[in-house]
Structures are given as structure tokens and as C-alpha cells.
Length: 380
Image (tube, rainbow, N blue to C red; front, side):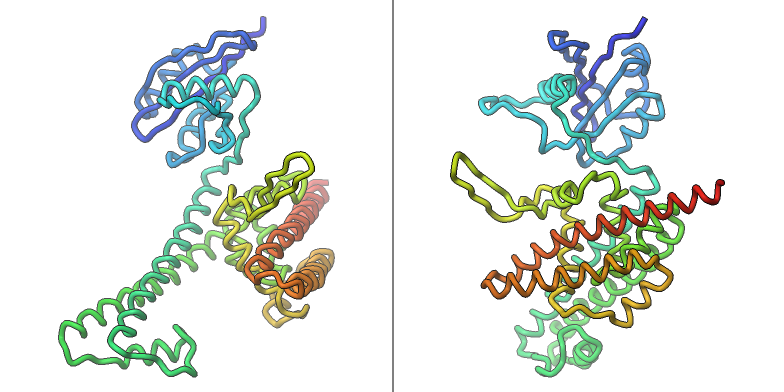
């Protein structure tokens, strides 16, 4: 006899988990089971209390606690999904929010099929994502350190020569030559400069670590990282970031789903015959969106194969290189057209980045398909 399915909603916090269960069937009972500590042994006891993993379907919202709970539940044999918190249905008039009510709402919505699961990486993939984001945090620290040093020099009237580009090698050499008569100012200057140097060393160390990690990633991921470099503006570090943030790109049935995942699609508020479109939604992966728009700036230039791009394309399948060339032609033409219409450059580049995702999806899917065919031939 088939065991009835029980839908479990977990409202997860750093130290506690509120638990609720919805019995199978639209009219089935939805009850709160209270709050348990967020500890592995407490989770195991909860599964045992619910009569084992058979028939259990568990969900909780993605958040700062990460995927450790998901991995533990899967290891215990429990079917678990992590859901998007921004897509959980909410009643407009509901003004009471507690952990127990949130868990009950999750259990009820999960039973009704109203929740949207998110992609959960494995532990190796999550480790690579953490490393990529650590490097991004270091880049932000570098920007702040440079800003402090630059504004300090500006306040004391030290301006670098106009012919020198800011933070280039010549600019840093000029900065190191500065001396101050006041001891307090000299100490301040040396501290700001030391922080700039420290962050630069930190970034170089992290980039080396990312390069080593990319060499040991799973073959199907490594193939996609190499294939994405057929596109202009996507160097090795950008390609690793895209794969680390988006996961297997073939999991998106169409490019539009990938564009929505990035949050680079325009918002819309239409009713009747009125159509209103606004700025991009930004309800997506901000890390992916950042590197995407950075890469899109490369398409303001005319189509060309630079020495660096030619080197990255060595050994790639001609079909991937052809997609990269089509992307250059299409996106540059689009850029010129939008600029000629008077659109702001930032808006134009954002639109180009959104279309670039379509070519990224095409390259990744083609690379995965070729990799799968190669493995089939090897097995045969």
C-alpha cells in the first residue's frame, strides 16, 4: 500500500528551524510541529519523528544558511527542494509574520505546487562559487582602498599628471614617490598605500586559486568554460564566473529563462491596452549580471579577431567559433543602432548583455552536446 505523501515546510534560521506538515490532499490537515534547533542531530530526530524519509517531501527557502541542510536531508534519503523566497505566494492583507506561520505557509504552498525550486549545486560547485565571490569581494575592497588613497591625495593638493592613466603602472610609481613634511600625513599616506598593495596581492592570490580550481572541475564544466571563451569579452575568469553562478546552462530550456535568471530582463506593468516597460528587474543573480554587462562593453567595437581572442579559440570546434563571430556581428550592429536612436550608453550595454546571454546559452549547449557525443563514442 502506498504511503501518503507529507509535505514539510521548514522556516530555517541560523539557530532554529520552524517545522510544519501538510498532509496529502487539498483538504488535508496543515499543522505546526514547533521549533527545533538548527543542528544535524535535531534534523535526524525530526526525520525519525516523521516516520522516516519515505513519503516525505521537504522544502525551505534559499537564504544565508546555504545548502548544508539540503545536503544533510538528501543524505538521509529525504526528497528536498530549496525554493526561491521572492516567488513564495503572499496574501495582500496578511500583516502577521512569525516563524510558525511562515513554515505553515511553505508547507501549504508546497503541497499546492505553488513554489519555484532553485538550482542547488553540489559541494564542489558551491566551493568554486564561494572562491569566485571571494575574489569579487576583494575587487570591491580594492576599489574602496584606491578611493581612500586617491581622495587623500586630492585633499592635500597632489594631482597626478594628466597624461597618466589612473592606477596604471606609471600612476602607482608616481604615487610611491610622494612624501609629506607632516609626520601624521606621511603615516596616513603609507597606511592607505599599504592597503592598496595588500588588496592587489590578495586578488592575485585568489585569481591563481581560481585558475587551479578550474583545472580540476568536472569535465563537462571544464568544457563549457573553454567554449565560452570563443565569445568576445569573455576571458577565462569571466567564463569560470558564469559557470559557477549559473551552473549547467542546458538546464534552461530556452535562452529567455537564462535571461530571467540574470535579472537583466525589463520590468513590465501592463493592463488592458496600456503597456508600460521599465528598467531591468534585477530579481536574479547579481554576480552573473555584473560580469555579463562587463563583457557586453566589448561589443561597442567593430567585429574583429584580436590576438587574445584567437589564442582562446585555439582547439575549439569550428561551430563554436562561428557562434562567436555571429555574436560579434549581431551585437555590434545592435549597439550602433541603439546608440543612433539616442539611448543612454549604459542602457544600450545592458540590452547588449541580455542578448549576449542568448549566445552564451547557445555556446554552452553546443559544447555540452559535443562533449556528450564524444563520451558516447569513447564508451562504444
